[in-house]
Length: 440
Ligand code: DOR
Ligand code: ZN
Ligand code: ZN
Image 1: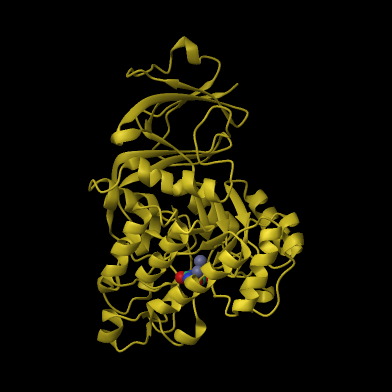
Image 2 (image 1 turned 180 degrees about the vertical axis):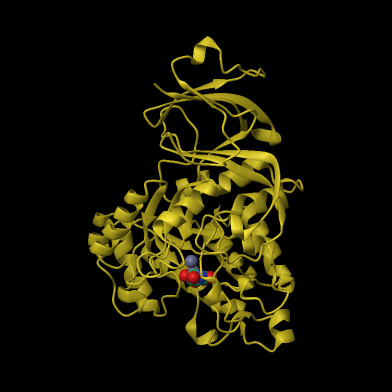
């Protein structure tokens, strides 16, 4: 017995939606049927013998893929666990995430990689792919055992949370990574330029007498690492691009045909430092909200393909930690449950992007760049699907989050385009309580 998802819509060229039915069997998409402009009746004999879910015109997208989240386990379970992070992802429409290794202990051994994989299996919700560290302890002094970590199931290598300060260490890392055909994923930040700075070096910092994180602190690493990627041939992926200067360097690297890819977060596409209302640490993240000029640059870079994909950098922290104020609170905001509605409302509803463009940046491109077998809807592929109600309008309310944490600057924002059901390998892992259209 399979599941028929009937009366769904898929995004096509020129912002057109077309009707589609899907038969899911044994976790795979067994069949897709063009609805030919007609609404099917769930009682129709051709669906009998199967579970039927009537999607009533809702959008069906490939499940979203986010290659940059922090699930905090082991060590910081009060912020998030792999189970609550997975639920939060599922509610946001994500079916695959890659989780960052800056836990306690960090993920720098075979045992810790296996620990994350086991926790993900126990949660049994979405696909959680563990990153492993570039350097032991993320201390920048000694490379981890890349071959063993790859063998254990590491997704890629990164010291996210901090930059790799030594150029020689980064070059050595790339040499090993290229021999194993694994990507190096980099949080770009020069430690000598950021001491004690909680926000971007710009208008907001000036107004509040705070030290600022300059654009060069990021771009210097991007430029350095592009040169190292050129020298070694490694696939180099830039985390959370936030500055005009980084964009310029990545654009040039791509023109030269180097193996360089990049990601950007919703908050860096939507907010600038001039939007920060006051000394509220829910607006504090690293890299920080930059100038309006940087925001324009990252939007254009995403549009022209310089930046390949959107990621959330979902970084949960407790209310107590965030209450320490702008200077002392940890960097980071949650993002999984708000990413799609925010971007759909801000860029698709306003006519700037097609729906297809946004979906591709959250599905097709991350899958292509990281050679993942998901991110598209085709017969014969695993049924990782997200159903979205494009007309549903709702305010972002942290109290609704399935994440353990509530640290978002988007409280009270009214958005359209809310996921209502998430399916991983043919199994419904989350659905909006009001969405119950199933017939046996
Ligand atoms: O905002 C951030 N949060 N940036 C980082 O680099 C680390 C992350 C975290 O782990 O909280
Ligand atoms: Zn980072
Ligand atoms: Zn991060």
